[in-house]
Image (cartoon, rainbow, N blue to C red; front, side, top):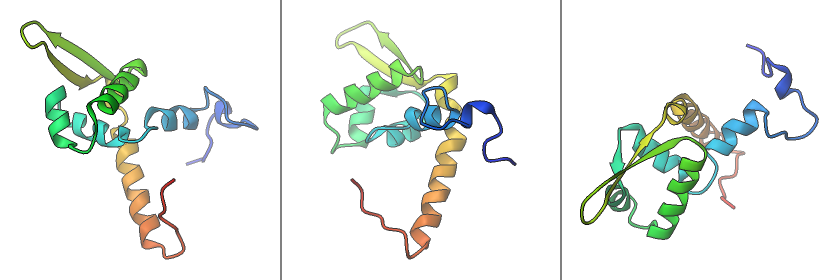
Length: 122
């Protein structure tokens, strides 16, 4: 398999429509991959997600979910009542990230196995 099979990937600088840049932007942001992972299992309510990630503030969770919604990766269902119930579910585009997340995990495992790779996060 060719590394860059299409012309949009043969740029001289990062371009917004480069498939690699699009994929990386889809999963960028702290907590994003973890939220995507949990939503791969099915729709979740806001409070369910809060309980899964107690160190994640409500503000940051709201910001991340809104960013995923803006990217077209997550859909939101608001149910009437008091309090209003909000459920988040992956869209078809969001579900398409499954193979990328699996491959990122496998690549990370391999990098951790290699002694010369440094694991410090920015």
